Amino acid sequence: MTKFLKRLTVLVATLSLAVTSLAQSNTATVLQGVDPGTLDPAKFASTTQQTLFTHIFDTLTELDWETGQLVGKLATSWEIVDDLTWRFHLREGVTFQNGEPFDAHVMQYNLERLVDPAVGAYAWFFVADADFESSRVIDDYTIEIKTKQASALVAELLRFVFVVPQGYYSSTDLTELASHPVGSGPYKLVSWTRDEAIVLERWNDYWGDKPSIERVVVRSVPEASTRIAELVTGGADLVVNVPPDQTLLIERDPNTVVKSVESGRVIHIAIDNSVVPFNDLRARLALNYGVDKQAIIDNLFLGLGTPLAGIANGPWRNENIRPYPFDRAKALELFAEVGYTPDANGVLRNAAGEAIVVTLDTPAGRYLKDVEVAQAVRDDLRRLGLVVEVETLEWSVRTQRQNSGMLAPLSLGGLGGLFNGVGEMRWVTPSPQYSDRDREIRWQSQEFEDLYADMRATLDDVARKEKVDRLQELAMEGAPWIFLYRQYDNYGVSSRLVGWEPRPDEVLDLRRVELK
Image (cartoon, rainbow, N blue to C red):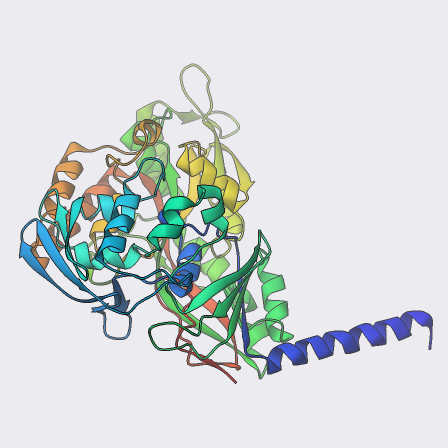
């Protein structure tokens, strides 16, 4: 046997032992596409973060995905005192992972932290959508929350407020907090190597039911093929964003399966409404007619997906809205109305001879086949006569650009995770929490804004549903996006992972599952 073969034999044996060791340990390994960027829950902006926050922190309320009902967590009960006041009764005997106690004063600090300019919280999920104004401690385990106007979703939106200990978070630098979180949840952080791996360990002093799995390793692996290879060789227990054309690789293996669910993720191309000619509604409509959404679904996802019509998820969807059909002739007609017609080479030009030259940016590995989808949209728009180039961005870079309003004029995104009607409508409206630059590039409609404000203050579910339906119609008519499709999520799952089922909000919840 040659030295090379001997070394190879030793390497294979070593890898086999490592995989066997992993399989026999009580460690679950999860492969996601991107790194969370920050572990400060005040900067909560993605479901990638939400998966980690769900294990490290607690919230006052939680959605039971089996029943669809909102249940208490750190809150044991709550009631509406009047149109502007909610009262929450808090759980006693809860401590944080650093030994600090939880009570109403701590909860008040958490709410104030969301509106503290020095923290710079991304407070869309509660402050903006619930119209939070202030809170008042009634006693050690009772707190009242005041809103600026009637708000039906205070209790529901509190499931996005991840509670932190006051002493540690009020005395620690924000940079330190971003990488060293402390919560009251069932897992605590052991280590975080950025863009590589996060290690969580079961916290045995947790106040609630103890999870079965001792350790959770969450790794960032952008390439789908690499994630799948690790799953089938026993190096991972759960992998995200499995492309439909690679599901057979998992299904063939007796120790792995594919689990799928239609998610609340709406994939779209955000359009900078300040850029000529996209500041004209007809040009934005032309983009929607010029992209073949069904072909993208069929060719890239083997038919798994639904052309996007409306925005809201779950019971708030407007089933009467139809997606924009693919109609290249209609698109060219609309561009001609704006003043752009094809030249001899098929490139759209205006009277001054100017072409529509535009960049389309996309994350890589965040959404299922995100780069390929962007390329398919690019190809359709080129056939229409636009000069389009795709720019691929790392997730952290894209997040920074989005927060500063500096994304490309066309930008592929996928919004999801909310199932309350109110939050989804915020995705297209330039609400007050956005920067001046963000308001400039977003679609603006006074009719939409007025109805949106009215809808948020509507306490009756039936009346609110009617307004959400109309808001979705207005958004489709205003064409702030190229509406693409609702994503189906495919997960590769090891047979070791017992009891795990995918959630439509993409949160990978391991708190109530077991490892063989």
